[in-house]
Length: 158
Image 1: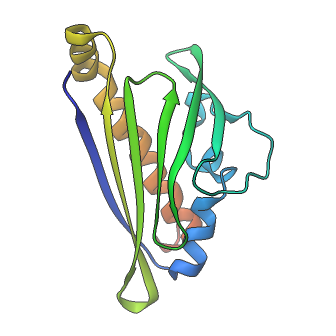
Image 2: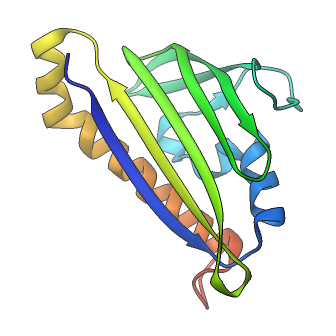
């Protein structure tokens, strides 16, 4: 099975002490996810984030609702955390979120998602035709929302 990688680095003009708590609050995932995915957290909120926490979601991909369960497998406050899919649309999903200090009191946020699709060669074709573009679109949406929320773009609409 081919394993794919999606990486994105974003400069956020706020200190890590402000940025990390936003991303460690599961309820903020809904704010940064495109509404077209129908993303909803099913686990009762608030969720105390730590290694071993399980989080259940509901998403809709191309109008097909499905469950998604992740586990936080690494939790290093203010530095990094990892969520791994236990149940969902991917054969494998490992998402590393890293936060580093950047010049001027900013934060560099780096995401690395390693993922595989099910269904062998059919999954590879679906990736080429649909999934790669969809994931890049989701992360671009996320980038824009984060820029707006944290003031990275002057005069941006909220």
